[in-house]
Image 1 (cartoon, one colour):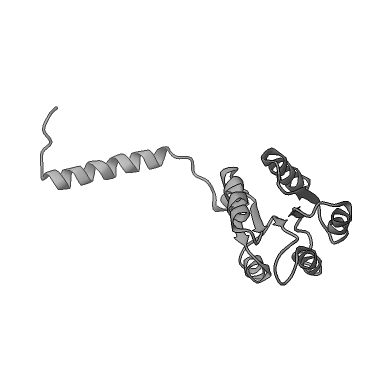
Image 2 (cartoon, one colour):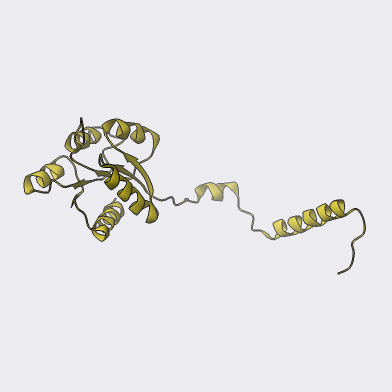
Length: 164
């Protein structure tokens, strides 16, 4: 390889700058307006509200691995903070929460114009017909019984999001 004249660091710097400028000239120029008009697709954000830590962590891991952004809450207080900090696309909500149960939370959420369109899927071990009816009455988009089947809950979330 032939030796280059001049100081090595200065020569190297000039060659790198020259190569960089050449490659930049080869790039397509995009106007700022067309850049602003492009819609950047972001993963939907799911909110998991579950007081059982092992189930909450499992649901978080399952949906994170599926490519979703997942935030989680153990109770109503944590839920209220997350609803103000994130744009939530879907809520997975347990019924048997401490202090304020899932039915009450769903009813409260549906009272706010900015939140009422967020789909809610109840995930509960209380799976009798009366509980399911009440879930739909307070605004559920679907109901998944615990213990849940992995593929069923993933399909349910995907379907509900596609219908929105």
